[in-house]
Each structure stands twice: as C-alpha cells, then as structure tokens.
Length: 223
Image (cartoon, rainbow, N blue to C red; front, side, top):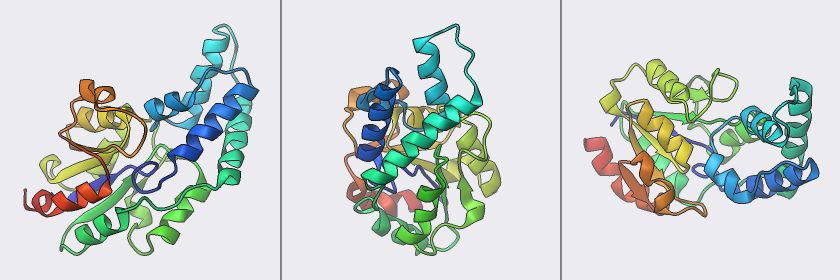
C-alpha cells in the first residue's frame, strides 16, 4: 500500500460524541427525527444531505430551501464548537508517523465535513502531515458518502493504482463508499456501533481502535 485515505471524524479526531450530541439537540429543536445513533450510522454524509432528508421526513411536501439548511447546519456547528469540538484520536498520530516514515507513501484525508474549524485543526493536531492538495472535503464533491465519489476523487488525484490504496473509516456509510470505489477498506470502530452494523458492507479488516491499526501498518505497506 502506498496511498492511505483517512476519514476524519471518528478516525483522526475523537469528535463523534460531540457531533452526535449536537445533531440530536438541534434536531429536537426543529422537531426533526435524528438521534445520536443515527449520527453514527449516517456519519460521512454531508450536513446538507442529512438536514434535507430529515426535513423531508418531517414534511415530504415541503420545499426545502438552501437558506433553511444553512441556518440549521450553522446552529449545529456552533453547538459542536461549544461542546468542545474535537481532540486527536488516541493512536492516530503514531499511525500517521509510521506511514509517513516510509518513502513514497501518500496520506490523504477524505471527509464529508464542511466545518472549516475542524479542517483547520488538522494542522494543529497533526502539524505538517496533511497537505491541502491531499484533502477531499464536502467542498470538493457533488455527492457525499456513501457514494464512492469522495474516495474515487482521492484515488484519481493520487495517481496510484487501486490495489496500492486503502481506506481507513469508522462508519458504515464510509465503508460502503470505500468498497464501492473498489478500494481495500479498513474499519476502525471507535464509536458505539457493533460489527453487525458494518457486516453488510463487508469491510476487509475490522479493528477496535487506532492502536490495532498501528500494529498492522507494516504488513499493509508490504502488501
């Protein structure tokens, strides 16, 4: 493996508990059905898609405007920041350093996030590891996960063969996107979900945390 495509929330940052609380709180304010567990199951999708579908479930005949969605997403983002945002995921820095130490490897971040504050934290949490040209965010894609577009875009820009790339995810929809892109997909289950939540999407590897990923980095690079 030469190309490593990391999801951000729940992989690089231990941010999902605050995301889940923020989503559930704001959804209740607007009478939308979206629980903390839904947040983990739907993680990886763009905030726009999450809010639009929740609003349409509440009222299928409603004409949902971009302004309404933007306002709710801004409210959720503000609450997420107030809750404390995110801190680097334990073990992630060691994983990144182990990959970076090997010549000719590429490290990418592929996220559905559109929160600029969290993107800025990449440089704070992992200084010098992520280059702007190796980031795929909600601003770069037309269709978010579980569509394979984000990972296909990273693969195309990497210039590598598919068999030289792997996806590191923590979410079922991210797993689905990685597999649909034809890429080796590793699940690091840092959240509240169980293996059964991922089984239908058939991850190539299922791990409990980033330290377990660190243990297999040497064999991944040698593949």
